[in-house]
Length: 241
Image (cartoon, rainbow, N blue to C red; front, side, top):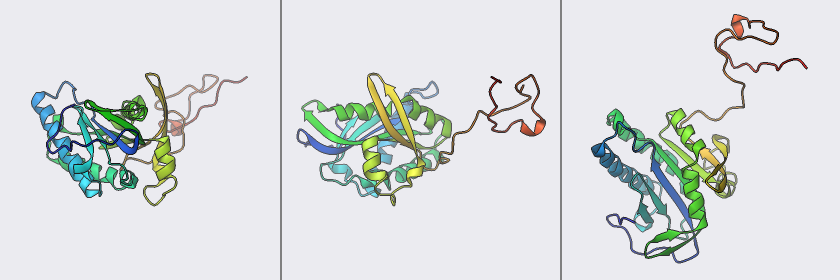
C-alpha cells in the first residue's frame, strides 16, 4: 500500500460495516499513453476524487484510502451515511471529469469505472481485507461494466451491489431514478455477481430490441425485405416449422 499525502493512520476497526468504493481509470495502459500521460492522469484522478467527495458532503480526509496506480480504494468511516454515494457523487464525478477532458489531449482524456458496496472490513498493518472488498473489485473488473463504458462515451460507469441498489436506490427514489440502472449479472473469476450499472448522462436503458438490420436482408423463403424495412430495428421471424 502506498500512503497518500495527508492519509489518516487510523483504519476501521475489525468487522465494522463501512461504505466501500473502488475506482479505476479506463484503459490506463493503452499504447498511446506514455509514462508522462499516466502520471498526469494519476494526479488528475485524485484531484477529481477530492473535489467530488468534498462537494458531495463525504469526508475525504477521514476516509481510508489505498492507491492502486490506475485507481484507488476508498473506505468511508463507519457511521457516514451512504446516500451521497448514489446522489450527488456520480454527477459530481461526471462533471469534474468533463471539465478535465475539455482541456486534455486525446491521450489524457479520462473515463472512470467505479464500484460501490456496503459491508464489514478487517485491517492490519498491510491494508484492508474482507469478502465484501473482493466483491467490490470483482464488480469493478466485470466485463459488462467495461463494455458499457467503452461503448457509451460516458465519463463514468458505476456498478453498485444488489444490496446497495435495494437499500438505497429502490427505497430512496428521490436520489436517482431506478430506471436509469441496468442489471449486471456475470461472473468474475470464482465470484458470481448480481449488481446494477449506472452511467450518468448516458442514454437510459430501453426495452430489448432485435438486431439492427442494414442492407438487403433475405427473409424466410429467400425473399428480400422491402427498402422501407432496411436499416431499422426489426425482429425477423424464424424459419417455418
